[in-house]
Image (cartoon, rainbow, N blue to C red):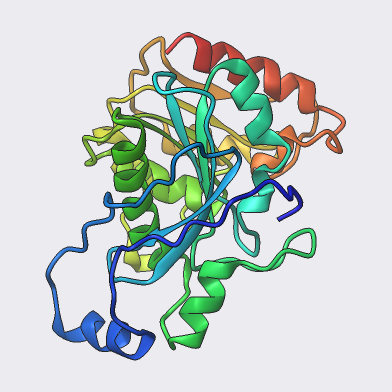
Length: 267
């Protein structure tokens, strides 16, 4: 990590070795408790953390905590990336009054010279790492975030993970709202079309994209009657794909920040 103040926790989620974990995936269907962790006193944040996915694979993440009571956001990255997609974003969300946890999902890669540690473990254990395989990582991370901050979670996704976030939000009672950057039907027959899933999403949501992608989102949202806290934001500028729309390298990042701040602060 860039911040030398990070403290690496060794979380006692499960005690079996890698070979046993792979074996358990096919033979043991007992749910893994992803909320248990060991917390050291006098922690400093950002804080490196590991916890178990639903199949026992260890997920790597970073906790950006400001206090015990502020709302919490779970940050999930786009394809080929890792949790460092949020290095610039998470501190700004802290400044707005939100605790955050950013994770490495098993479907991802290298960003800013940082590897995706969850993906590396999955590959070492010969586990599948397609987009849909990361759904269990996000579900486990929701459980962990809910247990850590003791409150429902704002689920934030980027590209493929933003589509998974919308599918998950239709059925997960621990999610209170969704932020979705550049969702799409990325999963073939493995998931329903978003146009179908969105008929069952009653939670507040903020969905955005580049201007070019906006028409496809408008289409899968058609046939609904959105409430005042269900928003599709279409940028005036060309914009970019995914949560990197908020990076300062995007010329229109302030436009996105103004819109997302308005949504979050009015939840």
